[in-house]
Length: 155
Image 1 (tube, rainbow, N blue to C red):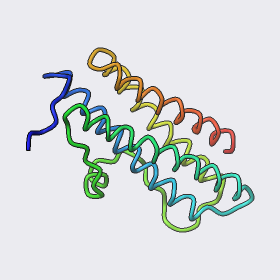
Image 2: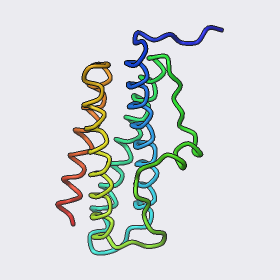
Image 3: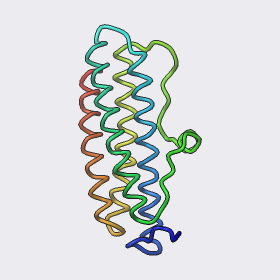
């Protein structure tokens, strides 16, 4: 069976695939970290933080599939295996056990800030290599930054 070919070639394909794979790692781990915090949040703002974490998980999961399928459409393999995520994640991992709602909001603000910065770097890198991919990353960044704002307002 022939592999999937790409409309991109050379450095454009390599750079774009790296950006998409990095975005995939951020989104997969964001969904995992979001659920970890969702299950263990306690405190006076429990309900609002708990529900806001579900929004983050939903957006991460929705964009994960879009990013992975774009990667494959460009003729590269999407690698979302747990071992790959564990080895390459850039997200700060939350502490174990119960975490007070204010601390969860501050932690998620920091995590989303890091994801946003990496997504913005990917926007810049894909400006000349593949603007269709850039549009996907821009859409992810808009939602990440909206969530960052909401968590920052809670902390």
